[in-house]
Image (cartoon, rainbow, N blue to C red; front, side, top):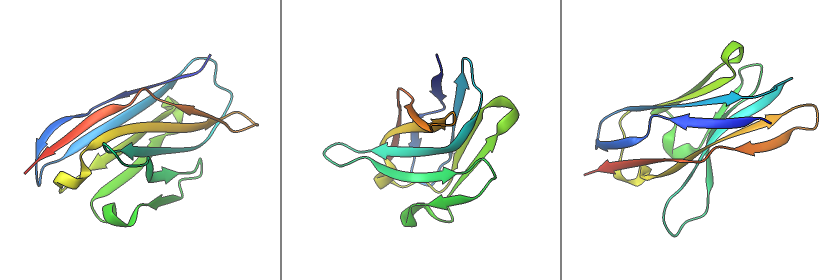
Length: 117
């Protein structure tokens, strides 16, 4: 069984940085796209950034230039470097991965990111 385990959330002041990590564990034959979503209280979950197995990326407009997604395929791990954080970035951040030839979507448990003003 494949699991996604996230780490790296926390409390930071506006303008600060955090780095999120998400490692896939278990019997893994292939991982396709990986990404980070977030959900703030009272809001829908939204895609923050995604990266294909080949390294192509896309970002939510509001985080472009501040966040960087990357992955280490050998470690089945995806990262989200978040710089110049703003209070509106406060949310629970979820890792997502498409696993196997059927691209089964998996989710991590979520990690809280809180940015104080």
